[in-house]
Length: 468
Image (cartoon, rainbow, N blue to C red; front, side):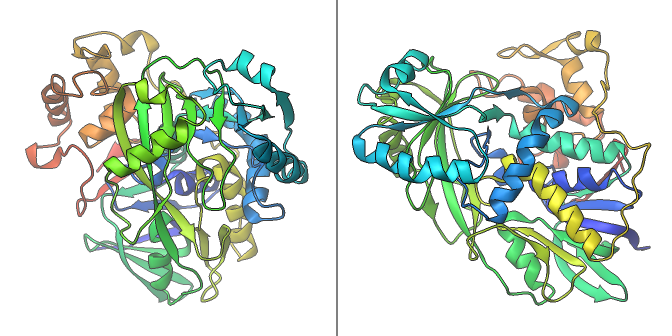
């Protein structure tokens, strides 16, 4: 088998890895991304609050704070260029007693000023006027008007799609099992036996970034998994902003936030564990969410849950982002230790990684023909025609086939769901999944290759929007 030859291979198909790929696709480079799951955004990037943080509470002078600061300036253009659903609703950090108010005044206001993030204090009446559902125990709140919400899957997918349009290649469904150092670079060996030769590697493998690092003998950091459980409700909550608690040393705490497509999100927990794959929910975890959130919104126990889910955050032993060359080989760049702010900081992280690659010797020649905006790939008039496949959400055959013909097409029912909203209604897919499977069959996937969620060991190479 002839080896693929690349300038840069990015390992990891989450929001950080795809943001880096998008950035690199703006230069004259041969680039690829490897992801062990059959789609992008299968890890922490799909199971989070969807909040775009300003970095007001990030440790000053940290790399995390720097990446968040850079990202604040980039997000307005990114959401427009990449067609990311985005609502600049702002957030408030609620003080329910004088002790919490003092913490905000002594810690978070100076912290925000140090990070260049605008904040202001709201009195009790101002908080309740904008957010009547907030507890009547509120004494005031810190307003962070720059905070926003977006759809994390669309962000991740759009990063990847733009990169593919610009010539990047995706290797999905086959993880990295080994990395061998060769003359002037590396050989990346995948589970299916394929090898990709490359001059540079970017390690953006999330909770497995320490595992990838050890493939070249770098043990400079470790990643521990921290589970966060969420509740999604479609009940109407009388709030207009993201409602934040005063954080603890371990976690930002459980919050209540609007969702861009409707409904509200409650959570997450912060449960340290050993298993990097355990994304189960539990009675105890859901109770922690409710207990935490009812301190902010007393009625949360009255809301019906339509979905409960969990994600795994990567907690790094260094206490900060790790974005630097490996101590073992300067052509191996880490983008690791990205805990709960990866979505928010992804534009800035990509900028820093590009600078690190350039410092390591990679020539970055701007490609003036590269696209910076996702085009309208399909005629809007065609999206809502044909048979209705998902009755609950009124998703048509045209919408699903448009997704199948996109630059990064789905290969699973879950992938169709996240691109179109099909299966998210009251029946939870019981009525529409057979029809979705039929459409996947029409695009060449047989019964053994149409899983509900992720599969491994079945590589799909995507370039220029085509499967091969």
